[in-house]
Image (cartoon, rainbow, N blue to C red; front, side, top):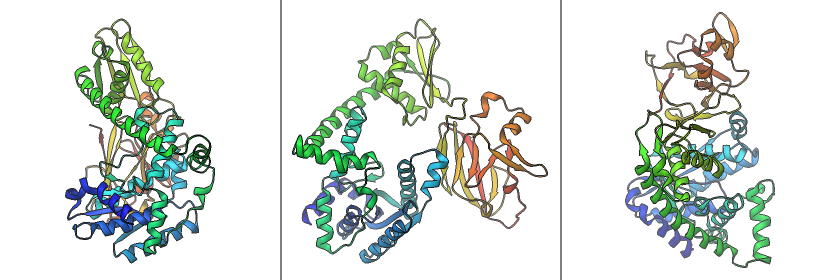
Length: 460
């Protein structure tokens, strides 16, 4: 017990001044790691003026079993004497709607939920129960998929609003901690399966490596992570300074680089500068590979002599061959197969870099003239801002259902702009394309309604 308590205190030491007098959200799934973390955080918080708030999201993927997890977390929070927020999200439906894998959709939904809880309760940080074992699995997973130095860093003990107080302790430690305190915990049977690559690494590959190749493969991977973290920090600092030196003024929403200044850098730094420039335009870089960056690097090498362009999933790179510049700007391919979607919190705001806009949602008791006002009772959250899809339809008053494609043609929206238009949807489908068309479902007369006001603005 003392080992785990000391590890938590050591990790949280840089946060003490930040969270003193505020709440700290503990993300608790109900498993041994997060249950041990919740108990350890309560012990750590005593006398420090920190208020622990447990949060649990039911992903609705395992039926009665996941509902039992939620009930267990509620009981754990009560036994620890701390408040608890429990919510449910239909992650399976969200994954299908957003064309994501179930694990990716679950992770995105969980992080949005945790940040929403933190904002509501006035927390300065969110604690997640990743352990040393999770760190080892993450490093090996990133190594197998050909990650660069940044991926070999593994999980960070803290960064932004996230802190991982158990990152230096093992699952064996958390199990022993729960046993010592008499804490019951839930066991997720899917973790023992081999359906997901992470599970195959945990249950098949790592035991093989430990038994037949390296008895301390965990320690070796962790040492690799330490070396990678130091190297990545140094390269990142170099690349950020180089970006400032290479950057030239460009049109709004774009980043322009002087190709000659870029070419003078070592390749590893050049490729980082290219990625940093794309990120500055709003590209999350989730689908960007080494080959993407190398194509831009090759174009930059010839930027002073010929025109060129390189298309990434969310960024368009161009060289005009005259001014020796290359420029990055947000890009959305005209094909509807290139889909982007952003779930908007109610209330709250979300940046939609793939559409070049930001969306803000507020709850109001009366209508106004600024924005789209929709009766809250008529909506079926979540609210999603996305680009159009084949088969999108809206119901127009006095007309009935019409295809969005036909509406855009009738209203003379240029073809090149149609895939950049923000389509506002709920679980039932499209609600509006602001300033162009609104579904009759949200045009109902409801003078006494509570309204959801949506405002769309260009992304700064």
